[in-house]
Amino acid sequence: MLSKKTYTILCLCLLNIFFSFAQNGKQKELETRRLELTREINKINSLLNSNKSKQKSQITLIEDLNYKVRVRQNLIKVTNQQANLLTREINNNQKKISANREELKLLKDNYASMIRKSYKNKNKQSRVMFLLSSSNFKQAYKRIQYLNQYADYQKKQGDNIREKTKALQKSNQELLVKQEAKKKLIAENKIAKKALEKERKQHEKIMSAIKKDLSKYSAQIKKKQNEARKIDRQIDKIIKEAIAKSNKKSGVKKTKTASRSFALTAEAKALAKDFLSNKGKLPWPVEKGIVKMRYGKQPSPIDRTVKINSNGVRISTEKNAKVRAVFAGKVMKIIKQKRSNPTILIKHGNYITVYKNLGKIYVKEGDKVTTKQDIGEVFTNPATGESLLRFSIYKDNGTQNPASWIYKM
Image 1 (spheres, rainbow, N blue to C red):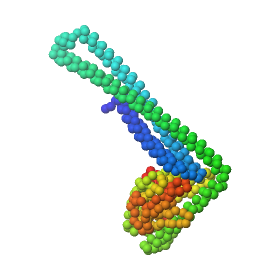
Image 2 (spheres, helix red, strand yellow):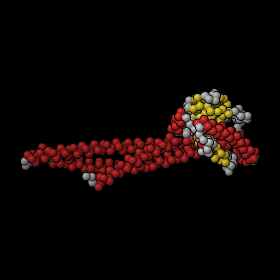
Image 3 (cartoon, rainbow, N blue to C red):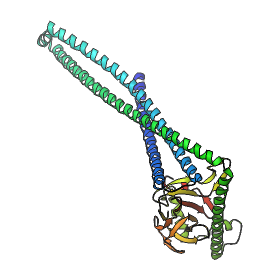
Image 4 (cartoon, rainbow, N blue to C red):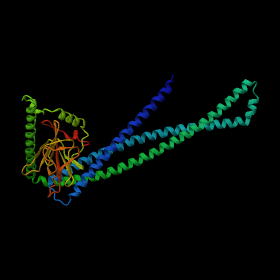
């Protein structure tokens, strides 16, 4: 049966171990996120630098800066969290070191006192005389046991001091490592804050120029939105016609509910199930890229009160980047319109992936494609050097958030 004191000490030890594991887990999670954000900044810098010679529009420059500022703010936030967590760990280590030092001092004092007593006793009477002065054999045997136990106790105390000394040295080394890690994080955060300040000043300067002729830039955005809506309406029409065709072929009665979803064959059902099972694990439609416009209603980059309705994502990538199918399927349709670049629709059961703003096409309607198969190239604007892929996912005739499907989007 454990004593109350022993039980309390055991509980405290277990809590300390649990806290240590939790801290380490959180620190690893933050470090992973920090490295992801750093890579994201490097990617956008790489993409921007590759197009430095091109004359970009003011709106594009604002979009780039908005993205960089957002990522940079997240990086600073995560780095601050890491530094704060390290501060707590350092404080805990210092408390542990202080406790270990006190315990070690007490052990050494007790050990010294024991050695002094042992030396005095040795002067007064030798070990042999101590044994010979026994009144009988039984007492002599007990004295031998006592001497052996006392010697063992001295040895254990000495070993305990050595172990505590090693533990203290290890704690001191860990403390130094954490202090250095914290210094490094603080230094990196200073650099990030300077870069953020510079980007904010650039943003203010460009926005100041835009506000002088806001109507002109608003008209440009509206024009782009109208072009995007035109393609989206055509995609909606194509999907609705395909749903109606699949229902008619399967003999499904024409109802309001049936008109919103595909009638699937056994093969198509299996493909849709496979597509769904890979939710969150699908590859990116381009090898390298960053999401500049996310899914859903987004504020306009030049006027926050104006909302842009995005039914997919807009990915900035490198010049003439290859576009690849995110999953196995069949090329359902290739849309070619005047004044806009081609769009490819790939069907995966009752799921459809859409790839807009292509410069080249490698497939034709009816082709079966595999995961990561190149289906074309992103169009690169010769004037600005920008390569933007517009990517959407549909389930039947309703859009889905690609960030929920694509790995780490």
